Length: 376
Image (cartoon, rainbow, N blue to C red):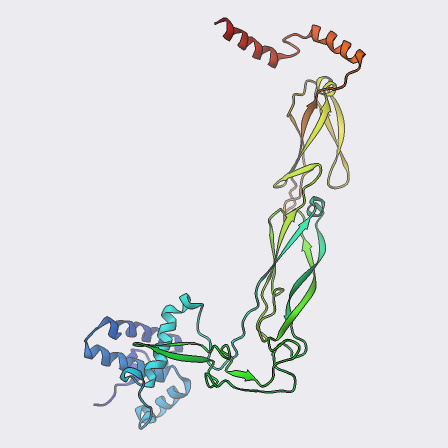
């Protein structure tokens, strides 16, 4: 029985690209897979036909030969694989297995025989700054212990002047296959880590890793208004990759030191300032420092009560990446005088005799309510 045209088997045009071939193959393979059609000899035969067609057309050289000579290009060749299937089954099943389950096993496929360059790890650096540094913004120097590319071997891991040889475990493919029942599973070679090549002699300075420990000095720009807990990412400033692999990233986590006077909430600042009882009663004013190095005048209205706040507009923190500025809120804590002199006590006693509900409306009203409760 003559074989059907491979393009007809997959249901694609002769000029179909790789993506169209793979899409057609996956759909057909899922439908005719023997696990979905137990005991169906026709489905098994169709499945083998689909795999043979895809194995040929997905390979550029095989496809060129097939387009020129047809099935005659592959006559009198090829052995049989496990479970009675040919080599085309093993390679094609590897494709579909990784397509279906690749995301659950750490990502997509890597080309066989190519260098599997592992990305370096990301690093974390905790940086504590003052509230003034957050207000002004600045550039700080940090010292980061990390792994950097080895300059002796240029990150290759091989001793300069030496060569490489083909990995004996995978024969240079960078992958090994293992049959597990019906499936043939392909995974990265554990000996060469997917490189396909082994070093004749490792670099003596880095032990064949292509990287070595070193402290790096980096400049970090701290923008104005940065808040506590903000994360700054420095791309490619993490650990160097293994044997020339790409570097990871460096993440800088910002924390703000407690300030002696101010507390921060977003772009607003809060300060608690104790004032004398007489200032609260009679009114007055005082000055507080601001983060820009200047001073701001705070006016206290006569009759100010404990806990009242005075808002100083635009005296807070700059908003990150904005021209807006927060406010400063000064909370007035009224201090009761202590260690009175004899004359001070006499004056206060005299004042107490003159107090009325008009001078103390809140307390007077409160005790009136209590009196009515006792009389009820």
